[in-house]
Amino acid sequence: MPGVTDRVIVVTGAGGGLGREYALLLAREGALVVVNDLGGARDGSGSGHSMADAVVAEIRAAGGTAVANYDSVATEEGAANLIQTAVDAFGTVHGVVNNAGILRDVVFHKMTTDQWTAVQQVHLSGGYHVTRAAWPHFRDQGFGRVVVATSTSGIYGNFGQANYGAAKLGLVGLVNTLALEGRKYNITANAVAPLAATRMTADIAPAEMLEKLPPAHVAPVVGYLMSEECTDTATVLVVGGGSVQRVQQFANKPVLFAQPPSLDEVAANWDRITDMSGAEPGRNPLG
Image (tube, rainbow, N blue to C red):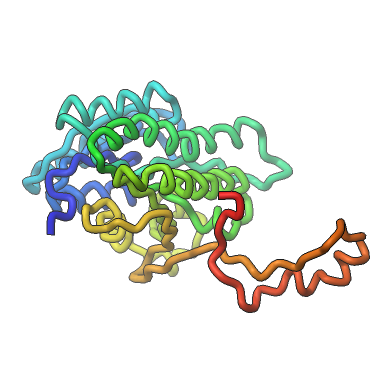
């Protein structure tokens, strides 16, 4: 099958962990890969070229094709430069894997605006900036693949990660709309919530759990979502440790009121309102 052969794919945050695994797998499968990494610390501080360069060297040593990019995805200019790197090196761009991320974990009552904003800028705005820069190429050529890294912290919540969880669930909202707008142009948009042992999760999960979650388990799913054969869109997947699971929003049957109800009427019907038996996949009633 064509898969990703000769497809130009940008992977952000590809200097280590999950991003490195995505880049290595895509290159092995014949993709032309742009390895993006700012080269900073887990909290987003600092920068450098060594991380991206090392992955590019690894890909080339294995016979693959890759170039490095060191721009920050947190700015419109950085994302534009990143996509231009793909165009300059390979002529176009066919897919983006929005994987770059940082952590500024802190309980909500102690969270500062800077801690909130820094995480939003890299995860949510970064996903927007990179995808927005690539979108005209996707439309013009009638093909595009978008994958964003969401998280179980966004889907279900996680203590101390209000900033991270909000950004990650925001990315799901982004791909839901991109899937609608991209459909007629053969552009798909999907989300993967990885469960993997990386520097991002080193102190979040128990060591014995992380031992069972090598990043390599996640990469094949991301690779398939980038492929020509995969036409699914607006799909959210939790992937890790050999498990691949779809997550979807469901809605129950509505409780109807002919007139605006009183608080007592809402209370009297609360069990019916919150009863999820017989629930079905949800959809936008205004869409």
